[in-house]
Length: 476
Image: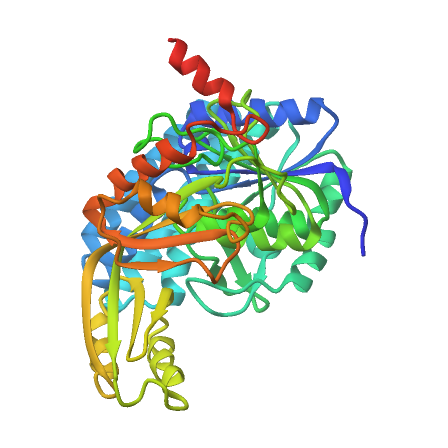
């Protein structure tokens, strides 16, 4: 077991933290602050805000044979990246850098023309197109850091983050990653440079470009932090940390100062957008603390995610919601208790690679909730061979997360008293000590969350929640 390097911090900056020259300049000041405190820094960046979506749109347009539409998107992206670089870099450096940028966009245009000519977009080619976002942003940031005295050194993440060949959501090979990081990144750190790499992008051992799935930049940061046994991983975003719920729904939502890995992973899975669930795993395995911080408010102390949660007087830490769900009811009075029946039902979901969020069973029926996807008719048609099936969409899951919910008497009564005016369809609690979930109509979500939040966070524990911020807002 390697010892943790307390002086080493991996800093991941999301798309809004590198969206333009102003944001990148702000990011460089944050990194400088860490270096001035004696920290060695490794920086992982997302594509500039909205670039991944535009690259996906370009790839899809090319796949439909719309070459002109695809190239028009690429032209707009070229202009945006060149303008950003021009604002960040001194003239002589910018001239040579623009040559590199133009060659990258020429490669992208050639790729889009090829897809349009064939008229087919494969997962492998799609990965290659979207990889340009992080390849470009990481190089721009590295150049900006170099010019600002931060010794920026660009590292193509595809040389370090090695995965299998599952395009769109590749699985990292952690032993290979650790070896590559030691070979390619650690020497730069030892020379007091700031390695800068793109998140989300990776490659197979043979060098074929892959991606880690949406939100994968957080995952990259955790893999790098875990692989180098960093003292901390910082996820810089545009919010002050993990909140007690969505501030757009509850303006009095509080910042959670500290939370356990398990709670954070549960929240992330159930819709809290701050963190990608897979981010947690490489950090958990090495017991590396993860901080969620705000690049637009770097003075805020954010949320610390640690292996174990501190004792909290409040029963819940946060309320998350997941919308656009469908309830599927599978009724088979003859077969439910027969051997192999449940396996037959779940084999259908497995065949279509459709994850199930919640399951509830009775004597004759199983109710399941799934993301509303286009394959529901096919899934239900197959299930109909073994049971009667019906499904209803426009449902939402409300998830309350906190340590040891199961050990607190009367907690379920309090939850359902707070939402007694809302029709609850399914309930799940026994499966987890830290999560109580229930299904309601999508249209009732905001009202339910506000009722729950006003009940459970009326008197929050100041050791765990940023109560001072609420007092300051109330005083204005």
